[in-house]
Length: 347
Image (cartoon, rainbow, N blue to C red; front, side, top):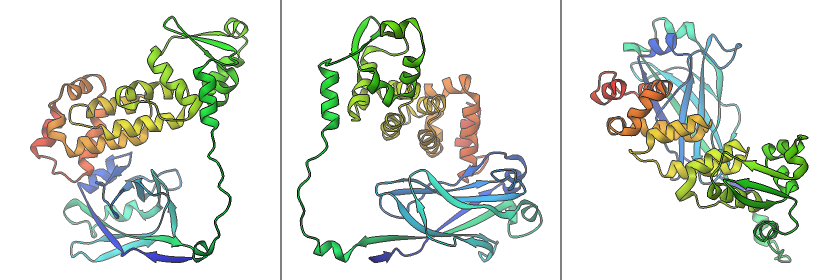
């Protein structure tokens, strides 16, 4: 194999109010996002009180790949603590090249003892500066590939098309699903194989199972139809008009891939007007990646978002999310008394 190595990338993160964070924060804090290449997003994550019982007395530090068009990414990394004179005082280096995939992290859960950070040292003016060095390593191509002879053309797999045809034309169906009075004929084996919720529904010895007729009360017909299209074909439905409703459906019926598709569509559609609503939606359906992106967006547009009706509704109904936005903004190194921060906190 012929390989090449990107130039070393350096990212410096200064954490303000560090002693307060070290003593009071129980959850992790995140750095602003940064890019190493043209189409990737990374961040650093610090756990002031470790990640488990073993590391409770340590500061844990991780490098996180948030998104990347080409996955996986192979990289080596190093974390360093800088003092006021921008000189390294301590650090740890990854022993090998690690494989990063989207939303995955590598780092050190016992990076340095907390007690050492609370004593006088490099964190002057209640600040801690972390330097992260990242080297991305990629394999380009195999010389043997150039000499490979063309083989026999294998037809593409048409399984999704064939299952979709069964669904569209109601062929060989064995159950009826009733949604708001509208009937849909389907196949129990396919639904049970694709959704753990449908599997549990069919396994129970209920009157519905005996009659093979099931009432679906938690979805609208058009949302149910789009979800069923995905179950049979694996193809993304129209997410522009119903991504939020399909996210709820995917979460309800255990369709993990559809759920991520909806998260991606909602993330791409983030705006000042819908950021707070999207954050509430992500929290309600335990959509970690979407929640992270929504918090990042709110942090970057705090003064505008806090004026929207969605934010004001969230302040009244979801105070824990307001607290999370507070922590996200604090970890972004904005001064504690900047007007946008005060407005975000007091809205």
